[in-house]
Image 1 (cartoon, one colour):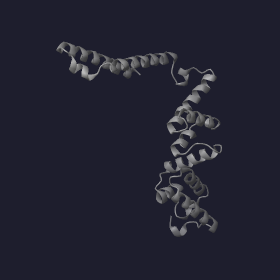
Image 2 (cartoon, helix red, strand yellow):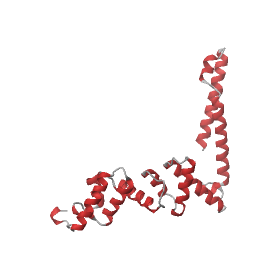
Image 3 (cartoon, rainbow, N blue to C red):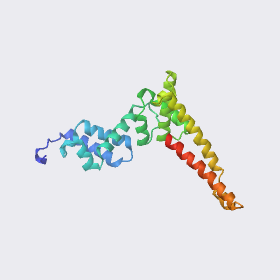
Image 4 (cartoon, rainbow, N blue to C red):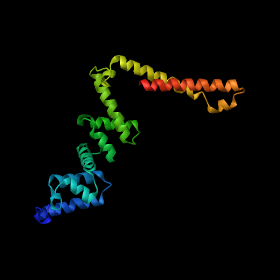
Length: 210
């Protein structure tokens, strides 16, 4: 659009835009403030002074893709909805929390915090979410194999294969490569190699069936 034909911002809107852009400029590492500022600019269409779309504004002004801008706004929104004193400190943590049902977010954060001894991580939140969902479904009487979208037979087979793989890993640990070099005779060295190769091949076959 021709710049001369663009709608003009009011003095209040211009001040709002300048204030939010200062926040973004100074706080690119503070995802909550940046997300809030971007959401304000989007919701009030303050980008229209120089850009036709919010997407082009984010790209040209800040080098953000549409997806990145959306993540920042979603992350800040999630944190703002949590009780005061929440422990979320990074965008990746906030993104994991966003995947949790709102009613269970505080519970999941607490589980993850306890599991990490207070050193919260995005991975811990993700694992706590899975645990929380599993506990909820178990309380509703939903079997584990149904939670995972499997038949009972398929689940049992998977458990068998996982157990077999664990045993194979333990067996493979017994074969130090140095044993081959230390074999007293060529026959002994060959036997060690054959045993190791047999276990390794069996492991690969089991993995292929999972």
